[in-house]
Structure formats: structure tokens, C-alpha cells
Length: 281
Length: 304
Image (tube, rainbow over all chains, first blue to last red; front, side, top):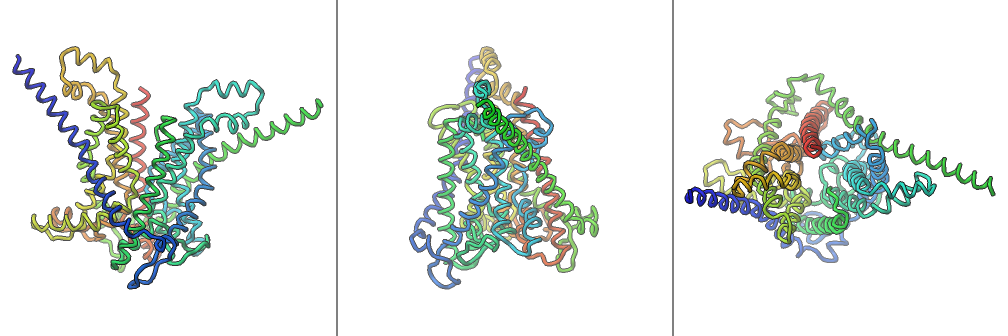
């Protein structure tokens, strides 16, 4: 009997060790990737790298200013569209959870969240590139906006659902009209949660390459023309990484480092915001 | 005075209606976008569907020069990479779920691990691909030399490895919250009967969360199927069907997403573009079905 208990205990301890091993071993590839990118990238970053434009292959130096500016412009334009639309749709979903429209809209959010980014690229190519005869930053922004939407909608909906009903009832009983209750009471109360959804969605799209391949493509020059092609950070990495030149690989490591920095910062901000709100994104 | 107040409230009433309509309009737009995506994909693949019919799916030859298109190599490539990645990732995601859900749900170590897992999902796919090209590919190449297959370095196996790491967070983070939802009376009952920790996990926690954990695996699968950039950079982009399983597994291949990414901009005639879009339609349909089944199971599970 004793021996049997000993055996069972050993098995239990053994199982625990295996679980701990598997759970922690997965951080190794993450650490290796992060350290490698930092090691390769940090030596590339200097003032010239951040403010210069790419040079032809063979010439030393060159920078990624065009990609930084392009990413900034496209993320901005995507946010301007996706944030209000996403918030309003999220408010609708949290306020009217039982309507037929809410069911279908919720279904669409679920579907949109799972659509592979490359398919978004194709669809926006058909919508915004083909009819206008060329790749454009606008098309890229639309693709990015489409990828932002589900995250913003879900975070808005979940944050607002967490707020107590009494808050809304108190405001309504004072005779405040519905839209002011939502905009001046409910949304400000859930502001941190909604904001965390926004930062998370930006962190997600800033590294998206696939939807930009067929929409904004790239541009070797510094450009602010939103109807023309525009470079972006992930695309410049893709372009340089798959090129045969060592100088360009170095630029790509530098660009990866910058991109990683952006993503990490945005994720930390999101973390700090969600800690306060305990929402699951 | 009275009149002015009435006017004011009329004004407010007008805004209230506008606001409510705006909310509804945005939700309708969302539905319209989704319908638009589906219709666009179907309409644009029409030339290809008309020309090749349903045989497109098992056509073995993909030859844009002679205008012959068959999706079979990419279906095989997608399934092979996704399921290999899934098989590699499942032990890890289950272990993370059990460890953070049951053994160590609180404290700094668990926070650290949880943040690390979330970070894995946050790192952009392009960075995994770039790293894989320059670090993993040489390693795999020497490994392939040792086991005696053609040392391409790139290929299905390499992409599956990277893909496996990338999809772990999706199953893991769902698993963590599900395992934490197991009612403690159930666990305490088992402990009271003299069960060890391992027996509680095996006989109470895992059976209780089985469907939910499965849903997490489906979400991971959905990610793996549609993952584009890392796979495109690592799979070697070959549209030929390998002669043996060994060659198919270690040699270069293509997935549906990677062939679209690498060939769409070069596609120069209607049928070629249309065939690629039809691949996109297939990919869309498969990922949507996988994701929706996963989400449905989760909703059912959390409501019970």
C-alpha cells in the first residue's frame, strides 16, 4: 500500500516537472529571437539611419526615414477611420446585445478577426487598387483599418459591458439624453479599456506586412503622397531581407529592431491600461 | 423661458435619434463589409472557377506559363505545415495552460511567463521570418545534411517549427482561463478521496476542460492556416509536388497564403490572378469555419 502511494506521488511529481519544463522551455526561442534582433539591430541605429532614405545597392549607408514616415501616415489614416467606427459599433454591441443586428455584427467581428491578413490584402486590392489603377497609401490604410476594427470593437464592447448599469441609470434618471449619457458618462468611465484596445490594435497592424503587399507596396523615396505608393516598416524589412545584398540585410536588422521597439512599447502601454481594467482582449 | 427649454430638449431629442442611428449604421456597415469581402472573393474567382471547375482543388499542376492551375500542391503544403506546427505546439500550449491555470496561477513568476507568452504573439510575423532565414535555416541545413536529405534549409519543416512557436499563445492563453474556471469543489472532492495532484489534473481538470482546450487548438490552427509572411520567407516557394513524403516534409513547398504573397503582384493575366484569388477564397472559407467552430465551442463552454 505504501509503495503504491509512493509510486503515485512520484508520478505526480514527475508530471509536474514535465509540465514546468514544457511551459518554460517555450520562452527560449522568444528570448533567442529578441536578443538576436536587438544584437543585430542596435548597431545599425543612428541619426542617419533614422533620417536618411535608402541608397542604391552597393553604396554604404542609407536609412529608413521613408518607411518610418510611411508607416506613421498609414497607421494614422487607418486609426482615423477605424477608431470611431469601431467604437460606435462596439457601443452598439454592448448596448443592444440581444438584437438580430447585434448577432450578425458580432458574427462579422468574429469572422473578421480570423480572416488571414493576406486575404484582406487581396480584397482591398480589388476594392481600392484595381479601380484606381495603382498602388496607394490610401489602399494600404483601408487594409490596416479593416484589421484594426475587430480588436477595437471587442475591447469597447467588453469594457462597456463591465460597467455597472446603475451608472447609466443614474445619468438617465437625471434627464440626460441618451447620446450624452453614452458619450459623457459611459465612454469616459471605460476610457482606459477602450484605449488599451486601440493601442493593442495599433501594435498589431504596425507589424502587418501581408495586407500591404498588394495595396501600398513600397517606395524607395520619401513620400507624403497618399495616392501613390508608400513604404512601411514591415515591408522594408521584407524587401531588404529577401534581397541579396549584405548592406540591405543590415538595414533590415535595424528596421526590425525599430519595429520591435514600437511593438514592445505599445504592448507595455496596453498592459498598464488593462491591468487597471482587467479586461481580456 | 419655457419655450427655450422646449426647443433645447427638441434639439437634444434630434441628436439622440441621430446618435442611435449612427450606432446602428456602423453595425450595418460592419455586416456589409463582411458580405462585401465574401462577394468580392467569389466574383473575382469566377473566371478561374468557370475555367477549371471544382477540379481546381485537386489539380496537381500549377503552371502559370501554360495557364494551368491546380491547388493541390498548396492544399497539401498548407495542411502539412499547419498540422506539423499544431502537433509540435500542442504539448507546449497544454503545459502552459496547466502550469499557469493550476500549478502557479498567481505570483511574479506566473506573471512573467504569462507576459512572455503574450509577447510571442505580439512579435510581428515578418520578424520571425527574417530571423528564421538567417539563423534557423543554416541550422536546419546542417541538420538535414546529417540525416541525409537534400540540404535546402528552407522548407515545410523549417516553417512548421517557426509556425509552432507563433501559434502557441492562442491555445495557451485560452487554456489558462478555462482551467482556472474549473469549480474548486470538484477538485477538492477528488483531493478528499486521496487523489494526487496529477490524478486531479487527469481525472477532473482535463475532462472538464477538454472541449474548451480543443477550441483553443482550433484557434491556433486558424492562425497557422492563414499565417503568411514567416511561412513565405521560410518555405522555399516551390509549387512542385515532391516525389516522397520525406522530400515533401524537408524540401521546399508552398502554402496557399505563401503562394498568394509571392505571386500575386507578378500575376499578369486574368486567369492567373483569378486562380490566386480562388486560393484566397478557399483559405478564407477554411479559416472562417475553423475559427467559428472554435468560437462556438468557447461560447458554449463559458455559458455553462
